[in-house]
Length: 365
Ligand code: ATP
Image (cartoon, rainbow, N blue to C red):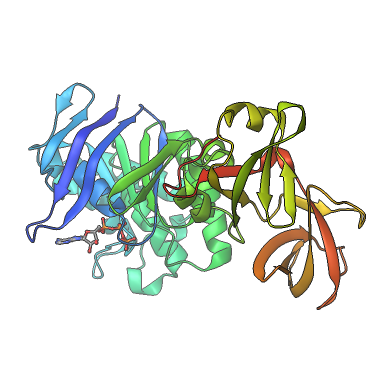
């Protein structure tokens, strides 16, 4: 069992910097949790508190039923994989993987079996006699994973473990880490600033900014129902487009979003949630993929503008569009053919619109 609970946890560094604020988080046994956010948001600090590498300043960190605030790292039954891999340069792969077990006086035969099993799972059996300097980045990463695996910890902690690998290897290692989680049946806490990594790996994502949790939810929750504009902007490529405008009563008790000439009739479900908010200044969010090429005669629920840029990205293309002096970016199929300066009309997928309060940035739907 390894359930991890933060209750009102704060971390202030010795210089007074408040890196994590009022963190409340329940991590279930065997869950894959990803801490996601920009550089400096407090992800690593949070992970290091779980590892025992940083002390909790205030609040409680609880493993199962035990408060572990003052439990030293080696008594926490956690294993950590660092971005830098932190391998011993003068030891062989075999010695690196087995090192933790040797320190714990595990019998030689047992170490041998664990090291060879891990190496086989990670497909590095043929590298056991090499030193780290004789390995590629991806192979070093596997050794670092192997070293954590053999300890069979209750909690597996990873701090940006793939960030030193090239793009193709990162994607294949993602799949392997997911498989490792399935096979090991332990709790994983994983730090990254890479949204795609978070979306593919996590059972739940914790989005942080400036030491404060912005939202906790499944990848679907976070992407489809962002709690605020920070979360909405942090996930999505190209990023979500925003329009500032006003809510107005529509026909048949509905609700419209209005900005100059643009009028979008919000779907019923949105209108129901926004009831009584006529006149409110809002920020509308349209994700890059939530448009389709609309018939030119569309007058409502459509955006008409001029093509500013066309950027093919393999299976899709990014379309930059000038809409009344505002630049919007959409992702459309590669078969749509548009030229610079062409006037086009795109139909908005209304069911997928996001509506935020303009002042606070909080979602209103
Ligand atoms: P990155 O992705 O860049 O590693 P992060 O989200 O993991 O960022 P942390 O490493 O947790 O961020 O750091 C959070 C904040 O705390 C940063 O502003 C950082 O400068 C600060 N910080 C980290 N360690 C210390 C320290 N020992 N003393 C003072 N401030 C620190």
